[in-house]
Amino acid sequence: MARRWLGGVPALVLASLALLPLRAQAVDHTGQWSFGASGGFATASAHDVNQRLDFDNLSFASAIPHIDSFHEAGGDLRYDVDRRLAFEGRVGYWWKNQSNGRFDRKVSAIPAALGVVWRPFTSDRWRIGGTAAGGVVIGAKLSGQDPLGGIDFSGTGGLAEGGVTVELALSQSVSLEARGVGRWAVAKNVLPDGGDVNLSGVSGRAGLRFYFRARRPAAPTPGVSAP
Image (cartoon, rainbow, N blue to C red; front, side):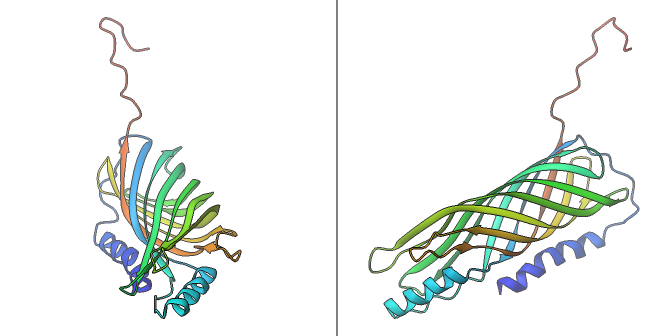
């Protein structure tokens, strides 16, 4: 189900964007700074985590499903150098709960990264291009409750991702944005047997971007003409 949503969410957003005119009146954003908020789904190469789930299922005669995808949400602060080039800082939260009714297991992590956006394809309202980022995964965790009191294993790892981004300006201060990336994200030697929390995979997200000025222009001094 989550994998179908992974492709469906960005596809739905992009389909709705396509209904809007490509050559509408040009939009000049309010400022060079912007804040983006988005959410979506991602696949996960959680081999070691799922081996641990198999062990727990055998130990407790349970049937917790494997974790092969997760939810994600986050935000970023971006500075546009020009219409094509931008730099941004990103932070978010990833999570997935699996349960069989008697006990559960949860994977979660906090990603933080610095990224660059390059949009060579621009029009009056559209900005289309690529993005790349690198950073850390903080608190990559496998936790949950069981008859023996539960587990809580966590660690910090590395993060790198790259992919495509599409942005459509709705007004001077608001844009719709969708992004799809391939991702490497691994916290090594977190599990008791030396296993990793590996959340590498493919991510699809969609959300809104809000543009603003860092500060208002200074008001002219009465009686002094501008140079």
